[in-house]
Image (tube, rainbow, N blue to C red; front, side):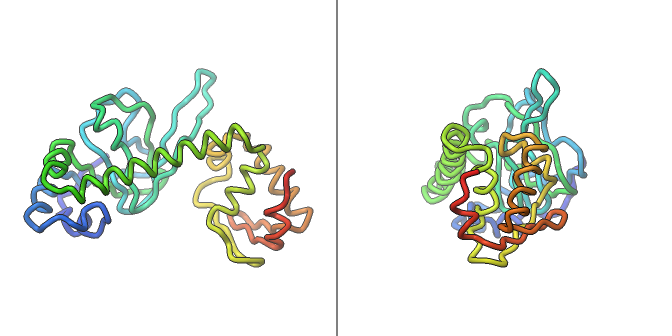
Length: 226
């Protein structure tokens, strides 16, 4: 993992989190920000590493996950451009509880905890935006628990296909990562994930071409309960 010396202000000012800060405040945050390039497959951090701030993705993608005692990887979340991670542990001043790896060449900004805390005291709007981001993350985790508890595995897979709310028949869904990673994110085996996709294809609801899925019958897909 290598750090670059590009001025981070051009990126920070485009992020919704920092839209309300003044140029002077942006300069102070930028002074405490490290712009880091992580090559595909490299670790951003590992479980147990200390947390000194949070990250936001400029380009690329990061997976958050952990490895079970049996050696199986469980993906907790996939983070893309414009999204951040690590805020909660930054506030708790606790070590990371998951591993983070780049799925592609990725540019991150690491904003230090000290700069965040100073801006929280100065700017109520910044505090609200930070709370909003944490609330969305919590809502997502609760939705995951609800899905794992109340929905069947096939319903979770269909829910993933429909999460972008395709408008109708012919809509296309492109998997941003491998099917194995998506299966882990949905808490199903890769074999089961592929089997459900092929069943849906055999029933004429979708068409599969590599990582691209075309929705052929959105009404039946929404009503299908496996």
